[in-house]
Image (tube, rainbow, N blue to C red):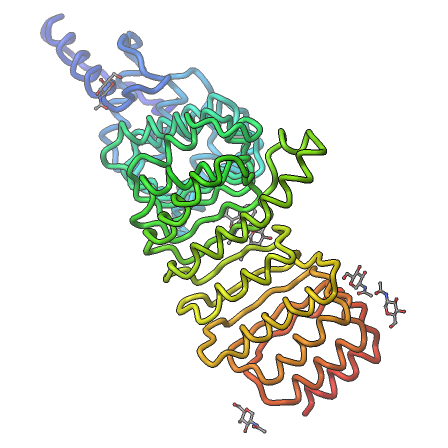
Length: 460
Ligand SMILES: *[C@@H]1O[C@H](CO)[C@@H](O)[C@H](O)[C@H]1NC(C)=O
Ligand SMILES: *[C@@H]1O[C@H](CO)[C@@H](O)[C@H](O)[C@H]1NC(C)=O
Ligand SMILES: *[C@@H]1O[C@H](CO)[C@@H](O)[C@H](O)[C@H]1NC(C)=O
Ligand SMILES: *[C@@H]1O[C@H](CO)[C@@H](O)[C@H](O)[C@H]1NC(C)=O
Ligand SMILES: *[C@@H]1O[C@H](CO)[C@@H](O)[C@H](O)[C@H]1NC(C)=O
Ligand SMILES: *[C@@H]1O[C@H](CO)[C@@H](O)[C@H](O)[C@H]1NC(C)=O
Ligand SMILES: CC(=O)N[C@H]1CO[C@H](CO)[C@@H](O)[C@@H]1O
């Protein structure tokens, strides 16, 4: 199917023929080494020669189309011309080096496997992307094979791709086979990588503790136990890691005493770390199953979480963005907020959905601490999000403070039921000259009268 023309070759002897065949065999076995497509016994001469032709051709898009055609041929599946056309025409003309598997999600799993396999030796594509598409085992096998061979693949995104918990360990093995691996960005978010939060030390943790050159790591919503992760991160991911997303994972209270030093050590050793998302950490299911335990550990855990942040944070000098929203911090904010004070690099703080504080005196104290934070002279914060915190009328103290604040450029106060009175306070704050450039005020039960106040203030 690759090359319909016939070629005549004449050999002087049977020996010469064997010599040519064994040479091609050797060349092909090197190219398809270790792949499910490899075979030590190439007996189909017509395949050999069409492959010989493709190998000697000029390679467009790093030879993707030719490799793909040969692999289809070898596996006895029909080669999809649209795949070749898309790569040679669309991807190539747009200089697009991110291969998006969703472009071919309508094809069968076997086709996808061959497409991914074609990337193993490809020099054009540097990124492989897939989201919300369950990858069958034959496709993931080929992803791993590509990881073990490619010297060009820099970014791998497999979000919500139905990966199994053994994936990280296999990935680790694949990477260790590949001395020229250059993967620096990995997004495995929303795959169940740790069997329901059992914190098995064998898979993800082994992978992360191998020395690597990861810069971007997104493990959000992967059921991994964040507390067990830091030891591994400390060993393998300290040097270059700049982006870490661990939101929507479990935070176990067990062995907290042991893990606290690792936490601290990691954050104070990860010099390049600038973005950390620790929002929505959920409890392990075994704790959730027992209602009694749930109550006890919730209290312990949440204070523990706050103390972790409080203790580690002043040491971390590089973090610029921190998201700790939806962590049930509540009254613990009182001791936590001073940790952020005068932090040299922290610019963006997201802490909404942590204000479920029944005692209104405590809530007032917490809000007062926040006001102090944004009114400090050396305040480096540029944006603050307090969204969905249901602050109601109590939040107006903060809105007032916005008037005299000189650091915040952006504030998100949506979902706080601040009503028209809050809008009125906002309009006053906006009339005083401030540094604010962006205010988000959705879902605050504000009527037209409230917005009229704000509009008048903006005119002035
Ligand atoms: C090819 O595979 C064999 C067996 O798995 C392995 O020993 C060998 O190192 C591989 N060669 C290359 C070039 O990857
Ligand atoms: C990884 O996937 C998540 C979830 O879809 C996405 O929001 C995030 O931006 C991705 N992370 C990176 C580093 O690209
Ligand atoms: C982190 O993960 C969450 C959940 O998957 C996602 O919503 C968010 O966009 C991710 N990226 C950043 C920058 O935090
Ligand atoms: C952090 O993750 C949450 C999801 O848990 C997401 O909604 C939020 O936007 C992320 N924060 C940042 C700063 O990107
Ligand atoms: C407000 O700020 C703008 C831009 O920084 C400046 O031009 C203006 O004079 C200021 N107005 C007052 C009343 O301070
Ligand atoms: C919305 O505001 C009105 C008065 O402006 C008040 O009566 C009502 O209770 C508020 N609703 C909520 C959900 O806060
Ligand atoms: C009218 C309006 O926007 N109402 C919303 C105000 O904010 C609360 C949450 O804080 C929402 O529940 C309301 O629907």
